[in-house]
Length: 177
Image 1 (spheres, rainbow, N blue to C red):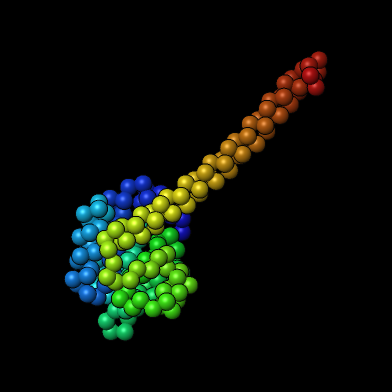
Image 2: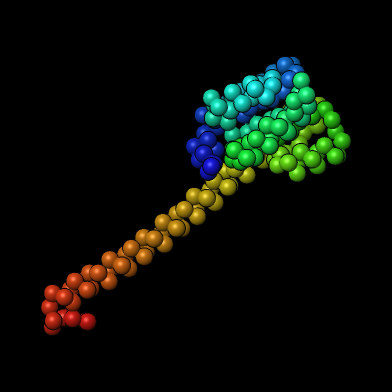
């Protein structure tokens, strides 16, 4: 699916989903993002995250790598890669080993944050995701405009040829002039 242009122009209408089984972490991250002007939705597990994604316009997911009951934010990442590739997933985890970071990025995560992280680091990651998606949206719109302009030029050329043919058909004295 194509990215939602309105979502990136007006993030107040869209949202960021924070998926973390630790309510305190989820609450702090949500408050920081809300204070920065973002609309935030929260989920404590995969089922709740799926419900939030189905009912809200979400453009970024912040997903904890390790959740309760053996769940993982990577499961949601995989689902979104298959069904909603326009949503950026930023993985956050207390596990700071390089292997898990590489694995998450190979699975399609946009970024990887190690807990605890500074608010500035979180906001910078969100800003990078927003900027990248705005750029992708602008590129897509420019490509669309270029295609429309080319089609308009072809239509105009065809119109002028048809007009010339009509004028030629009207009078044999002006034919081919």
